[in-house]
Image (cartoon, rainbow, N blue to C red):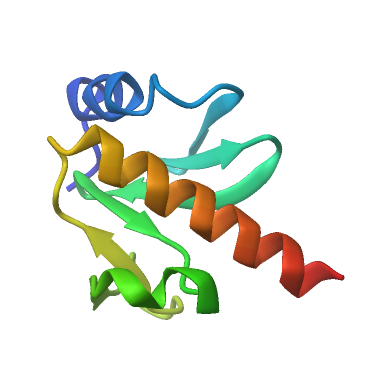
Length: 100
């Protein structure tokens, strides 16, 4: 099942506390960026976040976005916008450190 536009719009609304959020369509799903950093995506109406050292502490369940992909964290607390903002910022910090 592809991610619906309604779910995409809901997640983008939940991310409104963060500036510079970009959402790009990809094969029926959506990739999410913060300040140009790919931090996660929407897959089958699930918000999945890349795994890195700086977001392990949040205890999220790992899930596959699609067959053959790397495991990602399934962010299930969709109504907690403060936690979502914290997780996204921690993830982007960790992903930035990886590149250096």
